[in-house]
Length: 78
Image (cartoon, rainbow, N blue to C red; front, side, top):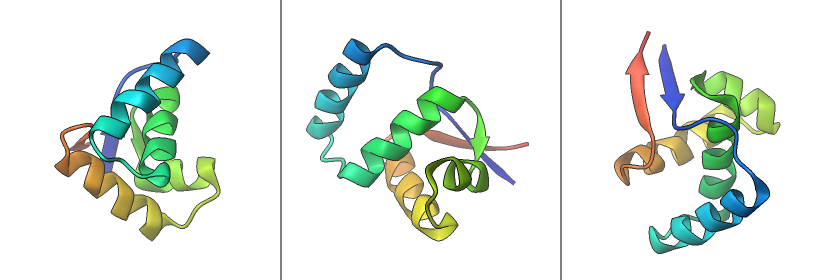
C-alpha cells in the first residue's frame, strides 16, 4: 500500500499562498485540490484521499503520480 504525505493543517492565507506556488510548478486544478487534501489529512492512502475528495481512485492516483514526479509529494510503503 502506498501512503502520501505532505504537511499538516494550514490557514486560509497559507492555502492561497500554496495555490500560487503550485501554479509555478504548472499544477492543474485537480493536482492543487489533491495536494491541499493531502496537507489537511496527513499520511493517507490513495483510496483514503479519493474517498475524502469524492473522486475516482484512478484519477487521484494519476494526479498524485504527477505531484510525486514534480517533487511535491512523496510515496512510501507502510
